[in-house]
Length: 417
Image: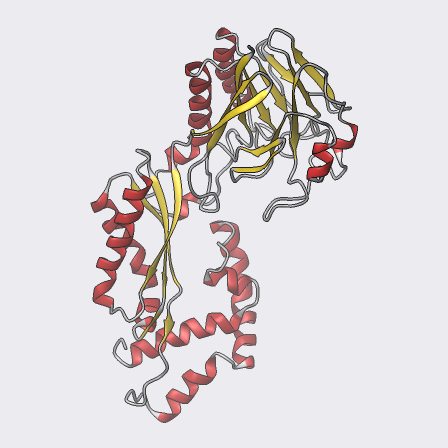
């Protein structure tokens, strides 16, 4: 009876540069910048603790060319621990660490097997009857279907195919090395170890086609648990796939429904939502949250007017729940109730406020006056987040910007209503 286990990981993005963290005062910047290494340390330790027979890394071990030799030296030391434990590592280069991207190198321990960029090749572990097939990316943008040239399954072996791909497409991921499930099945492999997609997904079970997801979320776009999978094989059949968490810091998005809520009720609503998220996560690691206020309320204008101070108030609420709970950003997306006939600003001023949002001339003036400023702000503050006012202004969506501004102005003119 043949039994073995292997760890399948991908998209580690060691030393990924994280831009713009300084904009968000209070974030654990050092922990975030060191998170990819710490998660990889967890991967190495878990592989040793589980006594896996080998490790496969399906692309994007590195995030791009190293800014210095520190990245390579760190990897050599970390992977050397697996060498001392007699655990071989099979490594595939993806779009971020393609041969044309990584210009530096260091001698790696003898347990590392890097797949060729010239053509698909096979590495065999004869003592446990495993054949591992794969091909590294020669350049950062591979658009050919690499699977078609992969070798046929080796007879009397458990066959694993390694590939960096989004298959026929996954939202938010470039279509590198595109292929179909039928293409994968045509090779008659027992397991496909994929990379490139940062969300965990078991695409298929006949054969098993698995994205483990990335090992560490790096921004608010990569929420939830992150890690790898441990696959147990018995007599040539996959018996179990265990998803393991390796991340050392986690990101989350929390919506707070402010429908009908007053300004005074905001703190308690936010506290309740953050408490639920913190208790549900229960990971024992820092949690970084983006709060989004939604819903229709008569106090929408006042909430928008206080956007600049809300984040500090929300940070204080988070800190009182746990010292490991942090706020990345507060987004105010509440909408106003229909205007009340009881609220009087003054006919001329009221008309001006109402028409500002759709006033083409005003939008053109804003674009002319603020355009140069936005370019300077982007250079110093970094890329704006999708959907915030700076991003909308940069995209020329002045009607939304004006709508937000006039709503806040109306709140001030009517005493906060």
